[in-house]
Amino acid sequence: MALTHAESLVEELDLHVRERVRREGVDPQRDAPLVRRIAEDVVRDHDQRSLTGMVAPVPDVDSMVGEIVARVSGFGPLQPFLDDPTVEEVWINDPS
Image (tube, rainbow, N blue to C red; front, top):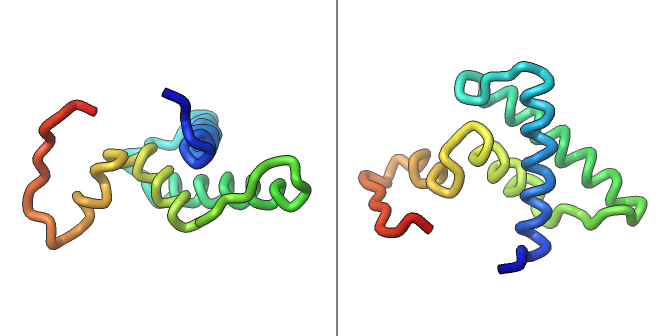
């Protein structure tokens, strides 16, 4: 199954954030605010490069940063549900 453009952009930026987190010795579980700042820097740098036409722009910077932070220091797609105070239970019925 081929990745969409948005999915491949998330993958690419996620990889850059993870590289910086490792290089700087950041513990993503203990220092999520620092991971957020790193993700903001990476996404902002990518968006700046998009002005030159070298890469595609990020359609929604805030959403992209949130998704990357959830992937790196949270529980990925489950994180929004875990952060939502109105959600009392999360059931997982399928590993995919």
